[in-house]
Image 1: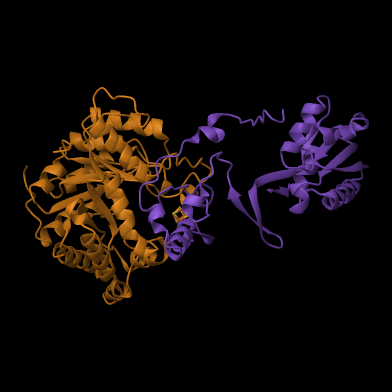
Image 2: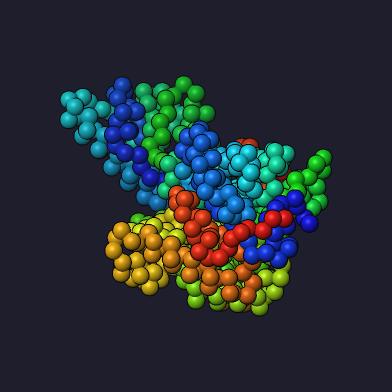
Amino acid sequence: MIVAERKPISEILDMIKDYHRIMLVGCKGCVTVCNAGGEKEVGILAATLKIARKKEGKELEVAERTLERQCDPEYIEQISDIVDDFEAIISMACSVGPQFLSERYPDALVFPGLNTKFMGGALAHGVWAERCQGCGTCIVHLFGGYCPITRCSKSLLNGPCGGSSNGRCEIDKDIDCVWHLIVEKLTRQGKLSNILSVQPPKDWTTSRDGGPRKVVREDLA
Amino acid sequence: MKSESKLEKILNAGHFAVTGECGPPRGADPEAIRKKAKYLKGMVDMVNVTDNQTAVVRMSSWAGCLILIQEGLEPNYQMVCRDRNRLAMQSDILGAYSLGIKNILCLSGDHQRFGDHPGAKNVYDIDSMNLINMVKTMRDEGRFLSGAEITVPPKMFIGAAANPFGDPFEFRVHRLAKKVAAGADFIQTQCIYNMDKFKKWMAQARDMGLTEKVYILAGVTPMKSLGMARYMKNMVPGMDVPDEIIKRLRGVDKKRQADEGIRICVEQIQELREIDGVAGIHLMAIEWEQRVPEIVESAGLLPRPEV
Ligand code: SF4
């Protein structure tokens, strides 16, 4: 899923400081799963903003809506009849949300309520970690199921670097050296030969480096 | 000869090589390099010029190399993968060679997290293994990474780093083998303090026939003080400083710790010289170039061969 985190309240308050009627729009997709922008978080943010504004002696009217998804025009459409009633909209989706809302409602002022962090998964309750950078050409099978592009701090395809120490990455003792994990796993599986020859340079054209990307499925489009 | 490097000539002739290191200044003053060059001239066969070492901005390595050439020294152009993509690397390699730089050391580079610009973009378009291979392809096939032809190929002697003390230990020799397969002509190792471990690694390298294919220069760094030894032991990832070294330095008066550090270094060089497959030493006297003559002399490595 896409993992996101709510922006600090102070930043959100600053974004909406000139407005009195706002709408918070949550998303039932990834950000609900990672407890950042679902119905519940929309409710909490609405209450928090109102209280903060009250302290300043100012009123704030907040409407709450949580859409099925904000990355689909179909669901974005569901607020078309009320968008004009608000001075500002805060999208509580990943960064796709505020962009799709802005595109659909060009006159609306849309603000991002979340910081989009990465593509990853939950390690434990309340802990998420990055697993994918969306390079567009998956090669994790060559590395024992680990992605060195995402998880090695230097994206080395021929690691581990000289800084790998006791299974930890040179940049932080709390970060696993993914190359240590790769070597251990492939050794255990008797597949070390996978990484004994030089892995050639990556072709980044399928990644963001090739320019903004688009997927077109002829059979569906 | 694969290149026009003086180091290659020295190694080919069977001499025990001595290379040094010079960190460029945090400013545009060429005198800082000239001053270090004076201490190193005639003492070492080649001088590495570091490339934004520890991710701290300094004068560019190629510029430092040119100043060394003006001073009559043979430079080794260090290049890290952290700061440049494949376009910048290849153009810098052509430029460096066109101005007389004949050696290159291909490195991953320290992550910028602990440098002076932690907010910088982390490039790593290619890694050090790919960089080695890219320089080799440029030199031997006269082709860029894209396959396009190079009009005048850069005939550089290709170096790579190896850290026998990084983890996982058992994989380290395989990584060395990969660097050799990628095209490394010589290796400069991380500073060696744990001799037993280094000897084990060298034995593995000999068993795999690697010492027949690549020149291994053993890295040494003299300790200036007990504080430095402690710092290296505890703070530098992938550095292995055994307790005996700490004990020896602690055993002498603070004022005499530097001399003791030099003595340890000289002993290490003598011990390394005896190891089968060690083709030379790489002496990294960090901001301590003035002591290099004394170390090289005490280790019996003078005069340096003329080739
Ligand atoms: S220590 Fe491991 S994860 Fe960290 S940069 Fe080096 S190889 Fe990559």
